[in-house]
Length: 424
Ligand code: NIG
Ligand code: FE
Image (cartoon, rainbow, N blue to C red; front, side):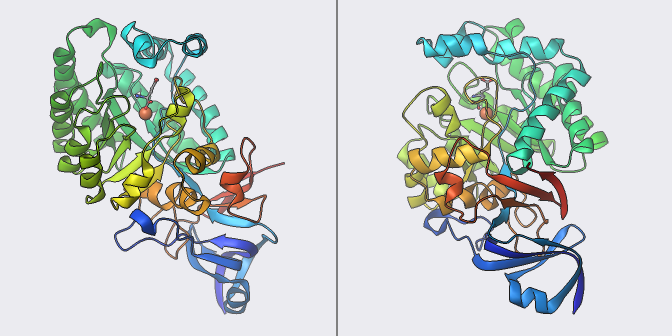
């Protein structure tokens, strides 16, 4: 008998979510849950040691602590690879205007949207931003998110972008969730650069990227991503390329907001630059879908965004799967179109509007989402060697996660083998 720290036994369904040959589950192979009935997990320190039938693990391991998961579903913790979780102020007025017919781009062109949130975020103190971020991070964790990406992008000046990174670092140091930071200084053109986008791009390249690289060297040992909003009214293809080439040279990994409203060629650019993920992909042309499908870049669908905008056109996920792409899901949590911290809701939307099966929504929200953060092999799976980040759900059936919506189905959340949340 081998000694471990924790045995979780008798899960009605244990979803191990095995990695695919190259990391994510690609194309039509998406949806392999590695499902074990009456399953058990052996955990030592913060890692999974073994996953298998309860009878096998109970015969092979003794544990200091046991959790009986009888009747319940156990899955990896959810991974949310695209959020704008830290912001000040709110945009309820804009929400009312959008309901009445104003478009996201109209509001953006009038200096609302991201620029509005930027004004409020610049005024907020570091402590205020940490408090606002912590409340949302708690909500995300309570809904099953154990690893989360958080972007800057509501500073749009060097000092406030660094303040946002400091808020992310403070949350990472004090909150159990695993956090991955992304710098997105090129999220919008700030008011003081209106009509001078190239001058702002120069500021991002000459001042912000070096400052962020210097901050990373001092404050952040892990990966740090750089993202750009490549869109009409934001940054064009050439500006996006210049920024991402500078970021890559400064040691950052890459992501791009592409093809949300208009396709500018950002998908081809992202594949060419070796971006870790390309996100949104609502209006990506077929030729670029084929290119993405042949690449190692993860395709992140954000169904909350069209839903939040009251639109009926969603990321063509079926085409992406046919092309062989690694598809992941994320909340895009932000104060504009997509204010939700809840990945369960994303799964419900993706099943209905992207026609993913419940099993596919789960893999896209765990293993493949981890790969969208370059965390394959570490998070998003309960195969041996991965972090013991997991959810014990109230239900015993994985299909309920996408089927039953608008409620929180989490019972317990464990990160690194420790219980960090228990529902009442
Ligand atoms: O991913 N599109 C750009 N960024 C966000 C929206 C952020 C905001 O409106 O505050 C997005 O949808
Ligand atoms: Fe976004």
